[in-house]
Length: 169
Ligand SMILES: CC(C)(COP(=O)(O)OP(=O)(O)OC[C@H]1O[C@@H](n2cnc3c(N)ncnc32)[C@H](O)[C@@H]1OP(=O)(O)O)[C@@H](O)C(=O)NCCC(=O)NCCS
Image (cartoon, rainbow, N blue to C red; front, side, top):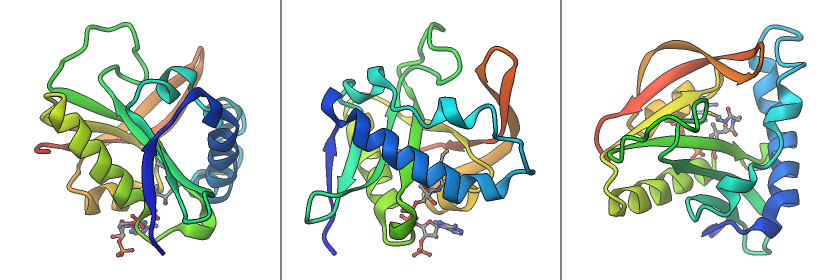
């Protein structure tokens, strides 16, 4: 089925939050030890208002307009938003595919759009804090694993993740 990718606007917040919730609870939670995500998941399934209006965050829509995927990139690090940015390094942000739509190219379409727009903005490499269930997806998109990483979500809350890099866009 044809898919379209477009940048999000503030009004997409509810659709994106709904998608993050169903995706992360269905696809991500089973990849972690029982209870490991109980405290962090409620924070992670909220659409990020700054990302939504950045022009660098996208939704994938099916032909009937249903939002089936979301994801994007930023120059800011997800866990250190106030750190100085490296304008040649982009950070992959908040990717999710609806569980009913996995393995149909939604995630790949998002990466492709991120690459095109980031390259045009002068970015040369992508870094990604991948969930424990997403390593193979990112590997298929040209990323390589640097190692495990505990990503800080809020004070005293971390999520075990994978640090991945794509050296060339
Ligand atoms: C990771 C995720 C976004 C991938 O989305 P997707 O739309 O299913 O990805 P695609 O259909 O574009 O997959 C492209 C390729 O990635 C690889 N891939 C994707 N999911 C995979 C899986 N579960 N296991 C192994 N390889 C996988 C395959 O090579 C696939 O190609 P193929 O289907 O032709 O074999 C989706 O599984 C997801 O939302 N996971 C839960 C949330 C999450 O972890 N998000 C990432 C946060 S960092």
